[in-house]
Image (cartoon, rainbow, N blue to C red; front, side):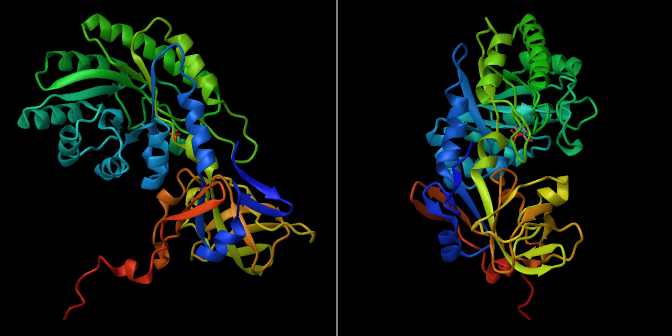
Length: 411
Ligand SMILES: Cc1ncc(COP(=O)(O)O)c(C=O)c1O
Protein backbone atom coordinates (compact mmCIF):
# COMPACT_ATOMS: atom_id res chain seq x y z
CA UNK A 1 0.00 0.00 0.00
CA UNK A 2 1.38 3.40 -0.95
CA UNK A 3 0.31 6.99 -1.52
CA UNK A 4 1.10 7.36 -5.23
CA UNK A 5 -2.26 7.68 -6.99
CA UNK A 6 -3.85 9.19 -10.08
CA UNK A 7 -6.17 12.15 -9.71
CA UNK A 8 -8.07 12.37 -12.94
CA UNK A 9 -5.23 11.40 -15.27
CA UNK A 10 -2.31 12.88 -13.37
CA UNK A 11 -0.06 11.00 -10.95
CA UNK A 12 0.30 12.41 -7.45
CA UNK A 13 2.50 11.62 -4.47
CA UNK A 14 0.12 12.21 -1.57
CA UNK A 15 -1.34 15.66 -2.39
CA UNK A 16 1.50 16.77 -4.66
CA UNK A 17 1.51 16.52 -8.45
CA UNK A 18 4.65 14.74 -9.67
CA UNK A 19 4.61 17.09 -12.68
CA UNK A 20 5.06 20.04 -10.31
CA UNK A 21 8.05 18.33 -8.68
CA UNK A 22 9.62 17.63 -12.08
CA UNK A 23 9.07 21.25 -13.11
CA UNK A 24 10.79 22.53 -9.97
CA UNK A 25 13.61 19.99 -9.58
CA UNK A 26 14.03 18.48 -13.04
CA UNK A 27 14.55 14.81 -13.94
CA UNK A 28 15.75 12.24 -13.14
CA UNK A 29 14.64 12.65 -9.52
CA UNK A 30 13.79 10.35 -6.62
CA UNK A 31 10.53 11.20 -4.85
CA UNK A 32 9.52 9.64 -1.51
CA UNK A 33 6.19 9.70 0.31
CA UNK A 34 6.45 10.33 4.03
CA UNK A 35 2.98 8.89 4.72
CA UNK A 36 3.98 5.63 3.02
CA UNK A 37 7.21 5.36 5.01
CA UNK A 38 5.34 6.00 8.26
CA UNK A 39 2.60 3.54 7.40
CA UNK A 40 5.11 0.77 6.68
CA UNK A 41 7.24 1.49 9.76
CA UNK A 42 4.14 1.45 11.97
CA UNK A 43 2.98 -1.79 10.38
CA UNK A 44 6.01 -3.27 12.16
CA UNK A 45 6.19 -1.25 15.37
CA UNK A 46 2.45 -1.70 16.11
CA UNK A 47 2.58 -5.47 15.58
CA UNK A 48 4.38 -6.56 18.73
CA UNK A 49 2.11 -7.82 21.48
CA UNK A 50 3.47 -10.86 23.32
CA UNK A 51 7.13 -9.87 22.98
CA UNK A 52 8.80 -6.57 23.47
CA UNK A 53 10.22 -5.59 20.11
CA UNK A 54 12.60 -3.29 18.29
CA UNK A 55 12.48 -2.48 14.58
CA UNK A 56 15.94 -1.62 13.25
CA UNK A 57 15.50 -0.16 9.75
CA UNK A 58 18.24 -1.43 7.47
CA UNK A 59 20.01 1.79 6.52
CA UNK A 60 21.55 0.29 3.40
CA UNK A 61 18.10 0.27 1.75
CA UNK A 62 17.66 4.06 1.91
CA UNK A 63 20.09 6.16 3.86
CA UNK A 64 19.20 9.82 3.41
CA UNK A 65 19.28 11.35 6.90
CA UNK A 66 15.89 13.08 6.49
CA UNK A 67 14.37 9.64 5.84
CA UNK A 68 16.20 8.17 8.85
CA UNK A 69 14.76 10.99 10.98
CA UNK A 70 11.23 10.15 9.84
CA UNK A 71 11.77 6.49 10.76
CA UNK A 72 13.45 7.35 14.07
CA UNK A 73 10.36 9.41 14.94
CA UNK A 74 8.27 6.28 14.27
CA UNK A 75 10.30 4.53 16.99
CA UNK A 76 12.73 2.70 14.72
CA UNK A 77 16.33 1.93 15.50
CA UNK A 78 18.85 1.13 12.77
CA UNK A 79 20.72 -1.81 11.28
CA UNK A 80 24.02 -0.49 9.90
CA UNK A 81 26.87 -2.08 7.94
CA UNK A 82 29.59 0.57 7.90
CA UNK A 83 31.12 3.49 9.76
CA UNK A 84 29.42 5.70 7.17
CA UNK A 85 26.00 4.34 8.07
CA UNK A 86 26.81 4.79 11.78
CA UNK A 87 27.64 8.44 11.01
CA UNK A 88 24.33 8.86 9.18
CA UNK A 89 22.27 7.20 11.93
CA UNK A 90 23.87 9.38 14.61
CA UNK A 91 23.35 12.52 12.52
CA UNK A 92 19.68 11.58 12.29
CA UNK A 93 19.58 11.56 16.08
CA UNK A 94 19.39 7.79 16.56
CA UNK A 95 19.63 6.37 20.06
CA UNK A 96 22.90 4.32 19.96
CA UNK A 97 21.15 1.69 22.08
CA UNK A 98 18.91 1.09 19.06
CA UNK A 99 21.81 0.56 16.63
CA UNK A 100 22.92 -2.89 15.45
CA UNK A 101 26.18 -3.18 13.48
CA UNK A 102 26.00 -6.01 10.88
CA UNK A 103 28.37 -6.89 8.02
CA UNK A 104 31.17 -9.36 7.32
CA UNK A 105 34.12 -6.97 7.11
CA UNK A 106 34.12 -4.48 9.97
CA UNK A 107 37.44 -2.65 10.29
CA UNK A 108 39.16 -1.80 13.58
CA UNK A 109 38.24 1.86 13.10
CA UNK A 110 34.58 0.93 12.63
CA UNK A 111 34.67 -1.32 15.70
CA UNK A 112 36.18 1.44 17.82
CA UNK A 113 33.55 3.92 16.57
CA UNK A 114 30.77 1.50 17.50
CA UNK A 115 32.21 0.90 20.97
CA UNK A 116 32.82 4.60 21.61
CA UNK A 117 29.27 5.47 20.64
CA UNK A 118 27.76 2.78 22.86
CA UNK A 119 25.80 0.85 20.20
CA UNK A 120 23.44 -1.96 21.18
CA UNK A 121 25.35 -4.77 19.47
CA UNK A 122 27.91 -5.89 16.91
CA UNK A 123 26.43 -8.74 14.89
CA UNK A 124 29.44 -11.04 14.55
CA UNK A 125 29.89 -12.96 11.31
CA UNK A 126 33.15 -14.95 11.87
CA UNK A 127 35.60 -16.16 14.50
CA UNK A 128 38.31 -13.79 13.21
CA UNK A 129 35.97 -10.86 13.53
CA UNK A 130 35.09 -11.83 17.11
CA UNK A 131 38.79 -12.07 18.02
CA UNK A 132 39.53 -8.73 16.45
CA UNK A 133 36.64 -7.04 18.24
CA UNK A 134 37.82 -8.53 21.52
CA UNK A 135 41.29 -7.11 21.03
CA UNK A 136 39.92 -3.68 20.01
CA UNK A 137 37.68 -3.63 23.10
CA UNK A 138 40.55 -4.78 25.30
CA UNK A 139 42.84 -2.01 24.01
CA UNK A 140 40.08 0.49 24.85
CA UNK A 141 39.45 -1.16 28.23
CA UNK A 142 35.80 -1.60 27.27
CA UNK A 143 33.31 -4.41 26.92
CA UNK A 144 31.87 -4.86 23.43
CA UNK A 145 28.27 -6.16 23.21
CA UNK A 146 27.87 -8.85 20.56
CA UNK A 147 25.28 -11.06 18.89
CA UNK A 148 26.43 -14.08 16.92
CA UNK A 149 25.00 -14.38 13.41
CA UNK A 150 24.44 -18.03 12.66
CA UNK A 151 23.29 -19.63 9.43
CA UNK A 152 20.06 -21.53 9.95
CA UNK A 153 20.63 -23.36 6.65
CA UNK A 154 17.46 -22.03 5.04
CA UNK A 155 17.45 -21.51 1.29
CA UNK A 156 15.26 -18.42 0.99
CA UNK A 157 14.39 -19.24 -2.64
CA UNK A 158 15.15 -15.75 -3.90
CA UNK A 159 17.62 -14.23 -6.39
CA UNK A 160 21.05 -15.89 -6.10
CA UNK A 161 22.65 -12.55 -5.11
CA UNK A 162 20.26 -11.98 -2.20
CA UNK A 163 20.34 -15.41 -0.51
CA UNK A 164 22.36 -15.18 2.66
CA UNK A 165 21.35 -17.92 5.06
CA UNK A 166 22.91 -21.04 3.50
CA UNK A 167 26.12 -22.74 4.62
CA UNK A 168 27.78 -21.77 1.32
CA UNK A 169 27.07 -18.03 1.74
CA UNK A 170 29.74 -15.63 3.02
CA UNK A 171 27.57 -14.45 5.92
CA UNK A 172 27.37 -15.72 9.48
CA UNK A 173 28.78 -18.92 11.00
CA UNK A 174 27.53 -22.49 11.26
CA UNK A 175 25.43 -23.60 14.24
CA UNK A 176 28.39 -25.58 15.63
CA UNK A 177 30.78 -22.61 15.28
CA UNK A 178 28.21 -20.27 16.83
CA UNK A 179 28.17 -22.38 19.98
CA UNK A 180 31.98 -22.36 20.14
CA UNK A 181 32.00 -18.56 19.78
CA UNK A 182 29.34 -18.29 22.48
CA UNK A 183 31.57 -20.29 24.87
CA UNK A 184 34.45 -17.94 24.08
CA UNK A 185 32.29 -14.87 24.84
CA UNK A 186 31.15 -16.27 28.15
CA UNK A 187 34.81 -16.55 29.24
CA UNK A 188 35.87 -13.19 27.77
CA UNK A 189 36.51 -10.07 29.89
CA UNK A 190 35.96 -7.75 26.92
CA UNK A 191 32.97 -9.29 25.16
CA UNK A 192 29.40 -9.63 26.33
CA UNK A 193 27.05 -11.82 24.36
CA UNK A 194 23.73 -9.99 24.28
CA UNK A 195 21.95 -11.66 21.39
CA UNK A 196 21.65 -14.20 18.63
CA UNK A 197 20.93 -13.21 15.05
CA UNK A 198 20.27 -14.54 11.56
CA UNK A 199 19.19 -13.06 8.23
CA UNK A 200 18.28 -15.50 5.46
CA UNK A 201 17.99 -13.22 2.44
CA UNK A 202 15.97 -10.50 0.80
CA UNK A 203 12.67 -10.20 -1.11
CA UNK A 204 11.29 -13.35 0.56
CA UNK A 205 7.57 -13.88 0.05
CA UNK A 206 7.03 -17.22 1.80
CA UNK A 207 6.27 -17.09 5.51
CA UNK A 208 7.47 -20.65 5.89
CA UNK A 209 11.10 -19.63 5.17
CA UNK A 210 11.08 -17.19 8.09
CA UNK A 211 9.40 -19.79 10.29
CA UNK A 212 12.09 -22.37 9.49
CA UNK A 213 14.75 -19.85 10.52
CA UNK A 214 12.85 -18.97 13.71
CA UNK A 215 12.58 -22.62 14.74
CA UNK A 216 16.35 -22.97 14.31
CA UNK A 217 16.85 -19.77 16.32
CA UNK A 218 14.71 -21.10 19.14
CA UNK A 219 16.85 -24.25 19.29
CA UNK A 220 19.98 -22.12 19.34
CA UNK A 221 18.58 -19.88 22.11
CA UNK A 222 18.06 -22.95 24.30
CA UNK A 223 21.56 -24.27 23.57
CA UNK A 224 23.19 -20.92 24.34
CA UNK A 225 21.14 -20.66 27.51
CA UNK A 226 22.37 -24.11 28.54
CA UNK A 227 25.93 -22.74 28.25
CA UNK A 228 25.04 -20.15 30.88
CA UNK A 229 24.44 -17.01 28.79
CA UNK A 230 21.41 -14.79 29.37
CA UNK A 231 20.57 -12.89 26.22
CA UNK A 232 18.80 -9.57 25.73
CA UNK A 233 17.43 -10.28 22.23
CA UNK A 234 16.87 -12.57 19.31
CA UNK A 235 17.36 -10.70 16.04
CA UNK A 236 15.64 -12.30 13.03
CA UNK A 237 17.08 -9.89 10.42
CA UNK A 238 15.07 -8.46 7.55
CA UNK A 239 14.13 -9.82 4.15
CA UNK A 240 10.35 -9.46 3.87
CA UNK A 241 9.43 -9.15 0.19
CA UNK A 242 7.38 -6.42 -1.48
CA UNK A 243 5.12 -6.24 -4.52
CA UNK A 244 7.10 -4.97 -7.49
CA UNK A 245 4.68 -6.20 -10.13
CA UNK A 246 2.17 -8.73 -8.81
CA UNK A 247 4.04 -10.75 -6.19
CA UNK A 248 1.90 -11.86 -3.26
CA UNK A 249 3.78 -11.24 -0.08
CA UNK A 250 3.43 -11.29 3.70
CA UNK A 251 2.21 -8.48 5.92
CA UNK A 252 4.58 -7.37 8.73
CA UNK A 253 1.96 -8.27 11.37
CA UNK A 254 1.75 -11.84 10.02
CA UNK A 255 5.52 -12.17 10.29
CA UNK A 256 5.71 -10.76 13.81
CA UNK A 257 2.74 -12.83 14.97
CA UNK A 258 4.36 -15.94 13.62
CA UNK A 259 7.67 -15.16 15.39
CA UNK A 260 5.81 -14.47 18.63
CA UNK A 261 4.08 -17.84 18.39
CA UNK A 262 7.37 -19.66 17.81
CA UNK A 263 9.18 -17.79 20.61
CA UNK A 264 6.24 -18.05 23.01
CA UNK A 265 7.43 -18.09 26.63
CA UNK A 266 10.88 -16.65 25.87
CA UNK A 267 11.89 -13.49 27.72
CA UNK A 268 14.31 -12.10 25.10
CA UNK A 269 13.32 -9.04 23.06
CA UNK A 270 12.52 -9.62 19.38
CA UNK A 271 14.47 -7.49 16.91
CA UNK A 272 13.77 -7.29 13.18
CA UNK A 273 15.80 -5.47 10.53
CA UNK A 274 13.46 -4.64 7.63
CA UNK A 275 14.72 -2.46 4.81
CA UNK A 276 12.89 -3.08 1.56
CA UNK A 277 9.46 -3.67 3.12
CA UNK A 278 9.56 -0.23 4.75
CA UNK A 279 10.96 1.93 1.99
CA UNK A 280 10.60 0.26 -1.43
CA UNK A 281 7.00 1.25 -2.14
CA UNK A 282 7.59 4.68 -0.65
CA UNK A 283 9.70 5.88 -3.59
CA UNK A 284 9.41 6.52 -7.33
CA UNK A 285 11.99 7.80 -9.77
CA UNK A 286 10.86 10.44 -12.24
CA UNK A 287 12.39 10.29 -15.70
CA UNK A 288 11.72 12.15 -18.91
CA UNK A 289 11.58 10.47 -22.31
CA UNK A 290 14.29 12.09 -24.43
CA UNK A 291 13.90 10.01 -27.58
CA UNK A 292 11.62 7.38 -29.03
CA UNK A 293 13.46 4.98 -31.32
CA UNK A 294 11.73 1.86 -32.63
CA UNK A 295 10.59 -0.05 -29.55
CA UNK A 296 12.85 1.94 -27.21
CA UNK A 297 12.00 4.88 -25.03
CA UNK A 298 15.35 6.48 -24.19
CA UNK A 299 15.03 8.40 -20.93
CA UNK A 300 17.24 10.84 -19.07
CA UNK A 301 17.52 8.27 -16.24
CA UNK A 302 19.90 5.33 -16.56
CA UNK A 303 21.43 2.35 -14.80
CA UNK A 304 23.67 4.69 -12.82
CA UNK A 305 20.47 6.13 -11.28
CA UNK A 306 18.72 2.78 -10.76
CA UNK A 307 20.92 -0.31 -10.93
CA UNK A 308 18.46 -3.02 -9.89
CA UNK A 309 17.15 -3.91 -13.39
CA UNK A 310 20.72 -4.31 -14.75
CA UNK A 311 22.10 -6.01 -11.63
CA UNK A 312 19.26 -8.36 -10.68
CA UNK A 313 17.05 -8.28 -13.80
CA UNK A 314 14.56 -6.70 -11.41
CA UNK A 315 11.16 -5.61 -12.68
CA UNK A 316 9.80 -2.19 -11.84
CA UNK A 317 6.42 -0.96 -13.03
CA UNK A 318 6.54 2.17 -15.15
CA UNK A 319 3.61 4.58 -14.94
CA UNK A 320 3.02 7.66 -17.02
CA UNK A 321 2.82 10.80 -14.94
CA UNK A 322 0.15 12.09 -17.32
CA UNK A 323 -2.15 9.45 -18.75
CA UNK A 324 -3.45 9.96 -22.29
CA UNK A 325 -5.71 8.17 -24.72
CA UNK A 326 -3.01 7.43 -27.32
CA UNK A 327 -2.45 3.89 -28.47
CA UNK A 328 -0.51 1.63 -26.11
CA UNK A 329 2.70 0.10 -27.40
CA UNK A 330 5.27 -2.27 -25.94
CA UNK A 331 8.53 -0.52 -25.15
CA UNK A 332 11.89 -1.17 -23.56
CA UNK A 333 12.65 1.80 -21.33
CA UNK A 334 16.40 2.41 -21.48
CA UNK A 335 18.96 5.00 -20.43
CA UNK A 336 21.68 6.85 -22.33
CA UNK A 337 24.62 4.85 -20.88
CA UNK A 338 26.91 3.00 -23.27
CA UNK A 339 25.94 -0.50 -22.12
CA UNK A 340 23.33 -2.84 -23.56
CA UNK A 341 22.53 -3.71 -19.95
CA UNK A 342 21.41 -0.13 -19.34
CA UNK A 343 17.68 -0.62 -19.09
CA UNK A 344 15.04 0.40 -16.57
CA UNK A 345 12.19 -1.81 -17.76
CA UNK A 346 11.59 -4.24 -20.59
CA UNK A 347 8.44 -4.91 -22.53
CA UNK A 348 6.18 -2.43 -20.78
CA UNK A 349 2.95 -1.17 -22.27
CA UNK A 350 2.90 2.63 -22.51
CA UNK A 351 1.43 5.40 -24.62
CA UNK A 352 4.35 7.76 -24.00
CA UNK A 353 6.52 9.74 -26.38
CA UNK A 354 9.28 12.31 -26.40
CA UNK A 355 9.00 14.84 -23.56
CA UNK A 356 6.65 12.71 -21.46
CA UNK A 357 7.33 12.03 -17.80
CA UNK A 358 7.55 8.48 -16.45
CA UNK A 359 7.48 7.28 -12.85
CA UNK A 360 9.54 4.14 -12.22
CA UNK A 361 7.84 2.59 -9.21
CA UNK A 362 8.97 0.82 -6.04
CA UNK A 363 12.48 2.27 -6.05
CA UNK A 364 12.61 3.51 -2.44
CA UNK A 365 14.85 0.59 -1.42
CA UNK A 366 18.20 -0.18 -3.03
CA UNK A 367 17.49 2.64 -5.49
CA UNK A 368 19.26 5.93 -4.87
CA UNK A 369 21.73 4.25 -2.48
CA UNK A 370 23.11 2.13 -5.33
CA UNK A 371 23.40 5.05 -7.75
CA UNK A 372 26.78 6.07 -9.10
CA UNK A 373 28.52 8.59 -11.33
CA UNK A 374 29.16 6.05 -14.10
CA UNK A 375 29.60 7.80 -17.46
CA UNK A 376 30.29 10.94 -15.39
CA UNK A 377 26.60 11.47 -14.82
CA UNK A 378 25.60 13.62 -11.88
CA UNK A 379 23.44 11.91 -9.27
CA UNK A 380 19.72 12.70 -9.11
CA UNK A 381 18.14 14.75 -6.31
CA UNK A 382 15.95 13.23 -3.58
CA UNK A 383 12.65 14.88 -2.65
CA UNK A 384 10.38 14.09 0.28
CA UNK A 385 6.63 14.68 -0.03
CA UNK A 386 4.61 15.34 3.12
CA UNK A 387 0.88 15.76 2.38
CA UNK A 388 0.67 18.84 0.11
CA UNK A 389 4.29 19.95 0.64
CA UNK A 390 7.54 18.73 -0.82
CA UNK A 391 11.12 19.43 0.14
CA UNK A 392 14.50 18.77 -1.36
CA UNK A 393 16.38 16.38 0.95
CA UNK A 394 19.41 15.99 -1.30
CA UNK A 395 20.17 18.37 -4.14
CA UNK A 396 21.09 17.30 -7.66
CA UNK A 397 24.85 16.98 -8.02
CA UNK A 398 26.60 19.74 -9.99
CA UNK A 399 29.29 19.12 -12.60
CA UNK A 400 31.77 20.52 -10.07
CA UNK A 401 30.78 17.73 -7.61
CA UNK A 402 31.98 15.18 -10.16
CA UNK A 403 35.56 16.41 -9.98
CA UNK A 404 35.61 17.97 -6.50
CA UNK A 405 37.71 15.19 -4.95
CA UNK A 406 40.19 14.86 -7.81
CA UNK A 407 43.70 16.26 -7.50
CA UNK A 408 46.79 16.77 -9.64
CA UNK A 409 45.86 19.54 -12.10
CA UNK A 410 47.96 22.19 -10.30
CA UNK A 411 51.05 22.15 -12.54
C1 LIG B 1 21.91 -8.27 7.95
C2 LIG B 1 20.82 -7.66 7.14
N1 LIG B 1 19.74 -7.21 7.79
C3 LIG B 1 18.71 -6.63 7.12
C4 LIG B 1 18.75 -6.49 5.74
C5 LIG B 1 17.59 -5.84 5.06
O1 LIG B 1 16.97 -6.71 4.19
P1 LIG B 1 15.63 -6.29 3.45
O2 LIG B 1 15.86 -4.98 2.81
O3 LIG B 1 15.40 -7.38 2.48
O4 LIG B 1 14.55 -6.23 4.50
C6 LIG B 1 19.85 -6.96 5.03
C7 LIG B 1 19.89 -6.83 3.57
O5 LIG B 1 20.54 -7.47 2.85
C8 LIG B 1 20.93 -7.56 5.76
O6 LIG B 1 22.01 -8.00 5.13
